[in-house]
Amino acid sequence: MTSAAIQSADVDLSRRAAKVVPGGMYGHQAIRHMSDSYPQFFLTGDGALITDVDGNEYVDLMCSWGPVVLGHRDPVVNDAVRAQMEMGDCLDGPGPVFVELAETLVDAISDAEWILFGKNGTDATTACLTIARAHTSRSVVLVARGVYHGAAPWCTPVPNGTLASDRAAMGYFDYNDADDFDRAVQAAGGDLAAVMLTPFRHVEGEDQELVDVEFARHVRNRCDQLDALLIVDDVRCGFRLAHGGSWESIGVRTDLSAWSKAIANGYPLAAVTGCEAVRDAATTVFLTGSFWMNSTPMAAALATIRRLRDIDGLALMQRAGARLRMGILAQAAASGLTIAYTGPDVMPYLTFAGDTDRRRMTCFAEAALASGVYLHPKHNWFMSCAMDDAVIDRALQGTEVAFAAVRKHFGPN
Ligand SMILES: Cc1ncc(COP(=O)(O)O)c(C=O)c1O
Image: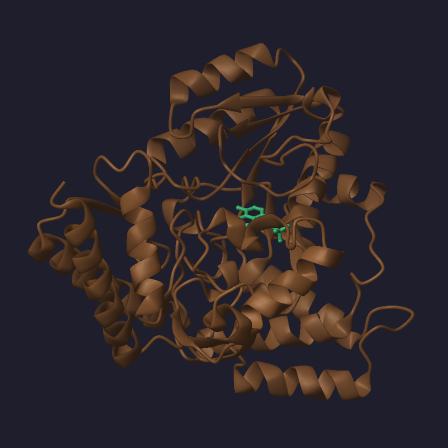
């Protein structure tokens, strides 16, 4: 054991966790999926910055994997949380904030005529499937290959412990490929309940792909022809790409949408919104959870949605994302490295050309981390409203070092 290891609070906590937690950590946050140099445990966050348990401060380009949209410990959201906490959080039923938030979101999201709340994105995507099947009395739900919709047996990317029957009524097609989609529709026969799509294609470790508007329209038309429902999984993109639904700007209507992550600036909340035609089905299915009616996350959501509008948060994130993109592209070019920088500016991802074993990307991420920038080598990054020009410039100082490290270790690509 090195003296550095002995002194590291993160190493100590990881070692203790390994004894009482299977694998030491699970899911996305298991740093064994990232790389050894990443910290596992964090002490605090402030605006665009996070601090690990050893006191290292980073520009946080992951925003807690999406939820932190205004910035860590946003004072307005936290005041709303404290005020609600004083009133009560977990009571025998919801508080007035439930109705106020429901009205606010139904008003904000143009395709929404009703709303249900849960906790996690998986609650929302799974509820969408249940409601769609209840509405149509059909079974098959089509999703795009490789796209993440959560950790339930019907959608987990790691099927250990699940049954083939958990996915028996799932069908798969390639995102943005209308022919492949039609083939999947055909295979569903007359049993197609719904199609679920994310607003754009974000698959771990791959270049991101914006939705082809013609493809989205095609899916909408097919759903209309077949009386199937179109579900948009807005869990990752919602309230970062738009104030309402992420597909409002392309004019493609959704029947059901799933929300979570940015909706409450990090407090645990998810939602399903739907159109009038599906309201009855949503009334008949049984959806519940011990903590689904807690008022504090709802107060956080109300404050988050209002604040995003008040400060024009989308424009702030767009400005930060554009500055980061321009800086990264310039640095890559100056380093003689060929990269792809894909996805919307507010949710970008970077890959190196020819980096099939991801060694360049791992080197880049580790060097960025050592230079005070927390980004993920395989998952898209997120902008927050707390990222002003100075923060982005600080991030770019770190990525400049990271490009130099890749160039030094691997040469030009
Ligand atoms: C598009 C999408 N859908 C669903 C989920 C699942 O959300 P949760 O992890 O909160 O259950 C995620 C989480 O990353 C997601 O990105």
